[in-house]
Length: 140
Image (cartoon, rainbow, N blue to C red; front, side):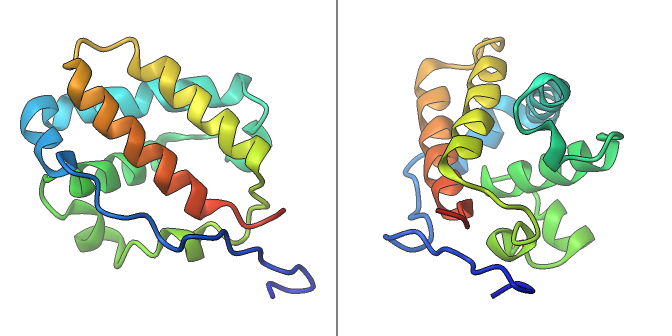
């Protein structure tokens, strides 16, 4: 429970390791990842989930960039600056259902398609996003 709201837990548990995810940082680099994250957040204000985000997205871009860098094999920026990720818990204040999850994925896919990363690395990263976002769903 969060306040008077029941927190839904998706079946299957936390996301499993995605083979190849830890190699993405070496291909995309910090600049590539930060540019992708920035592109994603530039889509948010026009999305169906804009109400879940602050008006100023600069800090969100920084935090998510740090997180993505860390999970793709880069330095542990997120943990060093913000503490243990615990992303599911950090997202409890937001009511995330499957529709909002799909909109989040749509924004990321549009952004991902703007970049000249290898198709294999894009597939690996998108699989990570699918699994990660499933675990963030906290409302039926």
